[in-house]
Amino acid sequence: MNRQLIDPFGREVNYLRVSVTDRCDFRCTYCMSENMQFLPKKDILTLEEIEDICNVFISLGTKKIRLTGGEPLVRKGIFELIRNLGKKIGNGLEELTITTNGSQLEKKAEELYDAGVRRLNVSLDHLNPDKFKEITRWGDLNKVLNGLQKAKEVGLKIKINTVALKNFNEDHLLDIVEWCSTENFDMTIIEVMPMGDIGSENRYDQYLPLSEVRTNIEKKFTLKDIPKKTAGPARYCRIEEKKMDLGFITPLTHNFCESCNRVRLTCTGILYMCLGQNDNADLKKVLREKGLLELQKALFEAISRK
Ligand code: SAM
Ligand code: SF4
Image 1 (tube, rainbow, N blue to C red):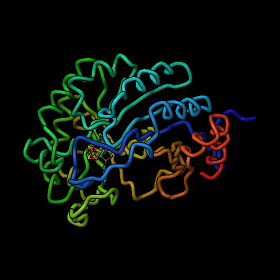
Image 2: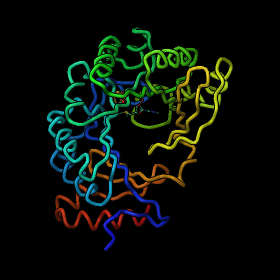
Image 3: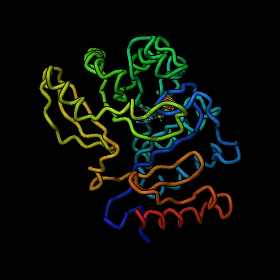
């Protein structure tokens, strides 16, 4: 039996993105409403269940795992999972990365490094404290900036994720590019998409096509498309004047299917095989009702539908 997860198009599925919680200590206006109703605990995978699922993926060829959320670093007990997965690096797993809002980094960066994490994606949409508060509702820019410095100090490589938002940061994106270049951070700009329950916010007011963003950046810098491939959906270009790579993620344009090697697990245990389709597999149900051996079979079955 083939021990690798290979989909019907011959693509080796070796990248797993795991949402470890639906909760967060921020309330970014494009992501959540202010009064979020979170899921009951029984519907959420326990950390042990997440570890079991990750281990089965690793045994079947997964080389990269990204933990995300909600905010992954606010889940109670998360560091035990991070340490345990970190021990798999060099033993099947090649990389463990985390996407975070940065709020916990000042306290936790060193622990992440010690656990084997080497790269982080940190989301940051504005460098002005009031604007940062406006967009995150509950976030404190200073705390995030201190966390980023700490992360740099301990040796973590940082990529800043910035969501491009109309009437909010469209005139500030170039400042963030400059700042990333000075700080030696990579940067990816993300097109805002209609996801999550954002309450009364109007999505139309937020939408800013990345084609416009790119044109604006090109007024100041020379952008050269480069064939850089990461395991994610970003397209990269090089800012010639800054010797810095800049990624663009346009999630609604599925222009990266041919190289897609990843699947996504929600905190409720649902595996999505493709960003563009709703087809999924309920791994929590399989794990809770039938156990680990059946989980392996369920994964092969799910990937055969990717
Ligand atoms: N809390 C962590 C963070 O903010 O980095 C991890 C989870 S967050 C859902 C992951 C990424 O999704 C962040 O970079 C965030 O900016 C982005 N995101 C959230 N809602 C989005 C939306 N509606 N459109 C585009 N990107 C979004
Ligand atoms: Fe929280 Fe990240 Fe969503 Fe902001 S984008 S509310 S930090 S999960």
